[in-house]
Image (cartoon, rainbow, N blue to C red; front, side):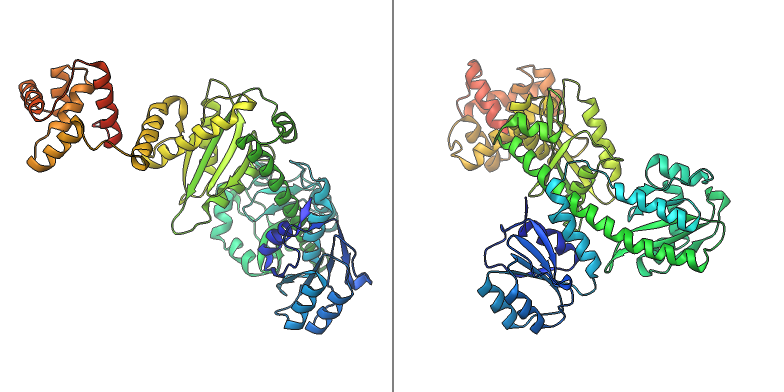
Length: 509
């Protein structure tokens, strides 16, 4: 079910803002009406104020509509429009005039209508039909790509495509050497600045025949591009067809994005329910397409200075996947992305997936990953908790992803340190007395005791760890026993001192 909150979250990316919401953001939306077609909208609908170009017209529309939400394009609204909307109980959304009504319509229809029956994993089939129609109009093979040069669709006319085109289609993205070549030629700079189609001459070293490319844009935002393989610049008729196709593609991309946003929301809700143990776990797993018997939960955090958008970038990469399929299901909660992957005793496939994900992220983004223990469907709550604690260890120490199976002892010590910090730590006892003595006298009794305990009373091993003579260890152990009572014969006493030493300071290793 699509709500006003979801509509605002998506339209917000195109310069829209919520002016007022008399009944809150949880209002459900079931239909779309277009004012320019003589409709004023009914209950639970969004009315698009096409042709409403003044504050007075907004007041008139809001006063006559029965819709739950009215969407208008304007720089600003007067107080009368806001007051009328509040009085009538109509939520008012203001869209940046730089975004065309066609694009706004694509997003709203994509969310409210298509979104009602969205299934996780649906592909951009409309773009393939568009690619075929463009190829027919320009008599040349076509690809449609997103802003990161990933292939969204391609036409059927690829028999004579060059090697770079085949590599692009098979790899589902433009090969990095080709992308680098195009960037050096200023192609991507042109796409960000101009809607005018650009001819890119052939380059044999890059295995690239000639190309004609046009930007696909929504307002000021570059969504992607359409590429036509051609040895020479297109004629006027074909160029006009390419420009028109770019406008049409923007609607398809916006609708696909809106559907993807809704799919991510549905997926996130189901995943969070599993991770928190809420609801019917088998039913949620079935909806998510998780058919394995064993799972592992991954907790992932991305850091990039000075940007704070790294978690969103990570979530987009994880939910987009590599190509058009992905093994896990994910949710973004605060600054952590959680992914449920098929599990098992062997964690190598999970770590391989993490490495692939890391390669997909920009070089300035650092990825921290904790992998929870192997779990059945009803145990993913525990695996999520282990993943949280493991990613905290990874954030502290760096290196490869931390797997709970291998780092349970570090996790346990972190738990004990946390208890010591928030609880009442001992204020007396042998370890406390020795720490006080070291601070006052400059002795090294605490580290000597710890080395002796960790080496299980082996003087030679403790001396090697401390880089002193065994006689020095023997002397210090005798002297520290004069400072406080240390019962080295009682195993419970030794265990308690080891725990207090481990919790209170980092390891000597």
